Length: 128
Ligand code: ZN
Image (cartoon, rainbow, N blue to C red):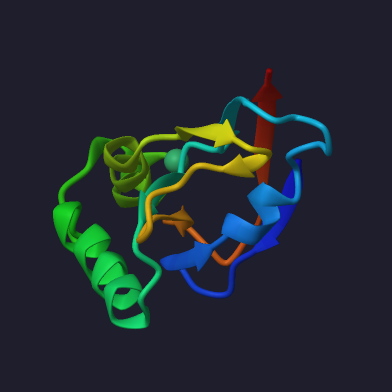
């Protein structure tokens, strides 16, 4: 497990190196599951190009607009963040081969904050 600190309501952070750092030495092949134990943040595998990171932030904000008429806002003014996180999903699985994350050439592990700024947890579970 590691923590990330986000600095805006919506933010996309490349956490690939931190996930890779959680793979124990000696694990040559297996599966790495990255799990975000939150209902207003998500994780996805995408290209970590700076323009695309900004595009993802903008896209996330449009598929559940902040000014929507949400019932959850009556008790907790963040329904948009829950809906955004629900679409993104809370986990990804990455094969481990030759002791390394077997990501595609352009894939990075992106943590997506939908209701920041906050300190968040990212769980990493490795099975051989
Ligand atoms: Zn809520």
